[in-house]
Image (cartoon, rainbow, N blue to C red; front, side):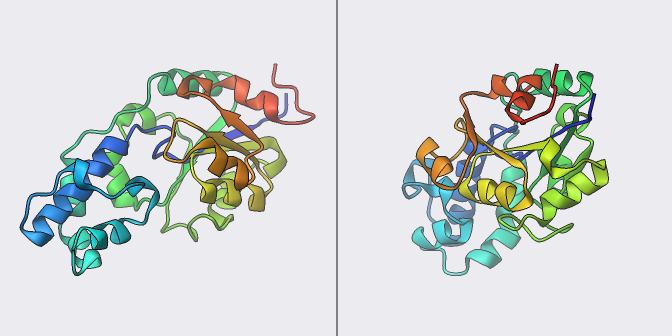
Length: 217
């Protein structure tokens, strides 16, 4: 059987990190402004905006400096867990002989405490923003497949944002949109998602059925 690969964007796809990011944005704004900011005070669509833009809307005068000072400390205070079914699905992919990996905008130092060990152990390769230009550039996906020695046409990439879909299509990889993530299905379709996945339990060997001309049995 020809070897295949399943690559993932961790945040919002493998990791249920939305609540942690909201709490972190509020905590950084609180530290920077000296007034208490709650997650409910965040502007609409906060998770779909750059964090510095959100902080500016919360009256933070120097968002970059605020993130340098307080982001990691606030984020690490809120444990992030995989979505239900993700670990089981990754185990099934590995048992099937499928290579697994992640391509993320996160820094490698942050991943050391952001990725639970049980999840990290199931990823054969992890490409960060320090390894390659970040998405929507396709470079990170190409690097991951190069390390796995797998052709793009034999891989899928599961992401939850338009930039994920753009990167996958630019890399020649099948783009699968995770609708349980941070963006609505319409945004993923508009960005070129080849298929939409309804829930985290969609992760597993059934992902490979979307690949043309490959026997995934």
